[in-house]
Length: 349
Length: 116
Image (cartoon, rainbow over all chains, first blue to last red):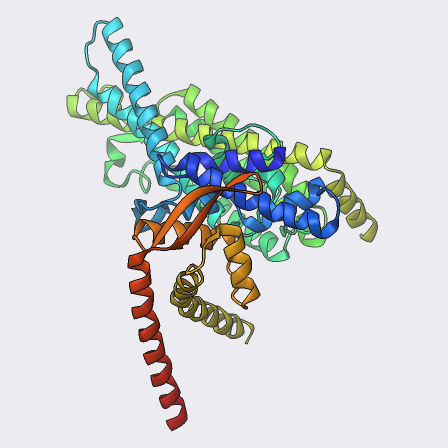
């Protein structure tokens, strides 16, 4: 009953503290009784697949655990982002991250002899808060969408995982039964072409009024710097190249490998472009290099600091997306069922 | 047309679940006049035509116990420890009131339906 043990271990961290062992013991007894009943009916021990079917019917481990939660605290911004099920884990990991961040920033500050650097502390805490909230909000959304379409294999049953790994898997799983991966919908290809066309038209028009429309009234004092210039042409080429995949998939929707390959490649290229922009430096500079007004210099410094944070965050997110897409691409290549589907698609075409 | 059918079926499903929710609690309390553990209770309810999934039943049993309507104890059966639930004295009192209420609602509904 290794599978049952793993299932219960996956549920446990999401149960209310203080009741975890008792609930797990009770669930274990009920599931064992159900399995024994089934074995008595069949007159033989259950196979792995039959055990999986019972656990699948019992429910997604995170959803099962969520029904035992008595506290209904959540994170909401207009609508609920992180529900009562994931909230306790979110809070625990957020506190741990903020504690570690504070310890590291304060240690560095004291080591350099600056004392408490409140700006750095707030900045790094904000970044930690934003990244963790995004991960949990995505996990929550995905969990809600796929609560009835979970697969024991997808939840890492059969291998040891901690609670955070389970949340990560819930957010970014690639193995949901019912997902039709055999075709790229034509509506998706058309939408992508239209969006790309709008973006490219807008991007091409930028140089005509660069420094005016973008910077509004400040255009006489400020202008776009090397960080922005490093983005311009590479992003334009990337956007133009982005027409190829939806155009091909419009006529060859069964070539899903092309969409996956393009997503992986474009995420990698986009991460590279952002890194180039970070290396190039300031995104906004003074229009007049001899400007001596202290307020202007201060404003430039603040704007560029926030630009650096924004571009860094985007590069990190884009890098993570690249790794996820790469993993999915490799998963597809090593999955015989997907290979067979792809081969059929090729034959049909 | 397809959207409207889906809307109707979603609406019906929501209303059905709402209607079932209260009835299931009464059914669970009524069944636990005799002692059961989680799995046998679920089977007994299913045998009487009331299918309830484990993910709903087991947390419900705990909630009713926390509210004082059920009592439970771990006991050995067939060489394994199981948690047996039964109706508490307070649960008996509440069940009697709920059944009265249910009879009244049922009678009223029947009268309304006959008039219509």
